[in-house]
Amino acid sequence: MRGARAAIHESLAALDSRVALYDLRETMEGAPRAVMPALLRAAGRVGDGSLVPALARAVAKERAWLEPCAEALSAIVAREKLRKTSTACKAVRPDDRSAFLLLWETAKASRPR
Image 1 (tube, rainbow, N blue to C red):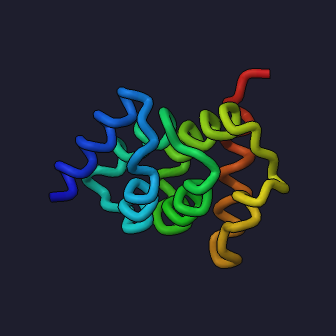
Image 2 (image 1 turned 120 degrees about the vertical axis):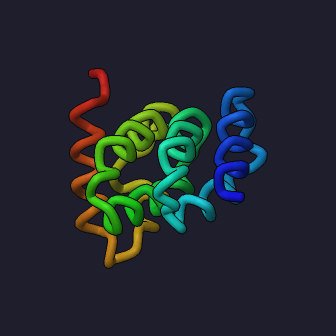
């Protein structure tokens, strides 16, 4: 079931459709290991600021997701012109704040200047 949902999110992202962002965010919150790469590709392609807390949560749960989440965050920040003080970034849970700061710095290092 998760594989099918991930495939749908990738297909929608390939069409530049944001129709399922709520479901993408909810699915990412569960951090399903097997399908997380596909979800992160979709997030990087069409994600918005509402996905920032889910990205931070994924890194907090599993440090191995740092680089892929940073790639997605970098794309979102560039597209949405987010700042660390943006509302979306302030929505990160206090428990995930240190993971978010690490994620932000990693994404910042990969963004073109």
